[in-house]
Length: 90
Image 1 (tube, helix red, strand yellow):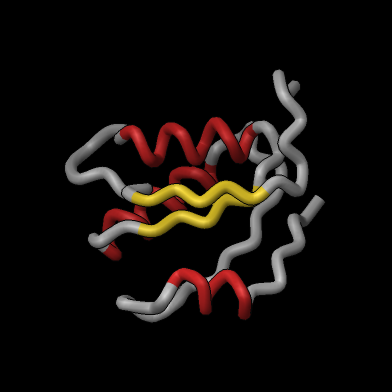
Image 2 (cartoon, rainbow, N blue to C red):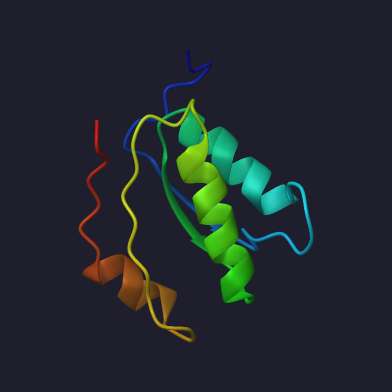
């Protein structure tokens, strides 16, 4: 049960990936916000680390639903946000 209701709130997390095993700060924060119902936009300079973080978040049993959209490396975040239709899956 969420402590705070962040349903339909958008959270942008830079540095979402983690180099190495375990949980980094970005992955941890994204997971916690997602558990509260937030819509997460995550980015990282390391695409492999960002994809790994996205998979960790999707597999978390306390995250109800997810929507994902991949963009090309080097994309302008403003363009990505404007082009995205974000609807959490409930």
